[in-house]
Length: 133
Image (cartoon, rainbow, N blue to C red; front, side, top):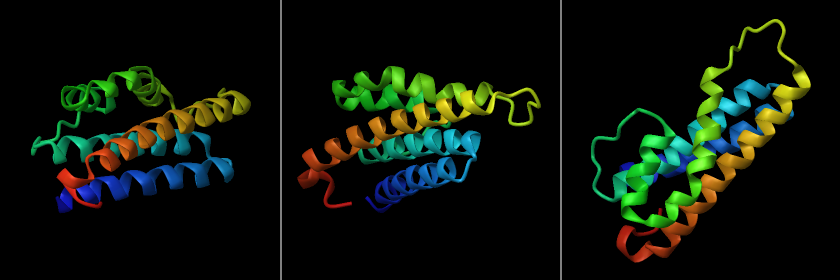
């Protein structure tokens, strides 16, 4: 249970850091942190459901495992797909459009929030099973 709680705490902290980086004008860093928040939150659900070896293939692979535990996680397919697109972006692109990157990062933050909300609801609903994290 402790490891599941650690994943959950880190996911929330990552989303908070994503928001801070967005405010500081570091959109791509923010988008990566939003992805990391989703990965950690979904890892918490996987771990708490007995998946001891968490795959590091990304948010979509973790989401598939979460959906096996609860079909409601299927609602996050688009969120995780968008979040993973940050990995296709070049952080050193001299021709990057700053306004577009800011919009993308804000979108990623929203998708990260959706994952955190779903996981929070799931953990709250299953509090008796997992305890308070």
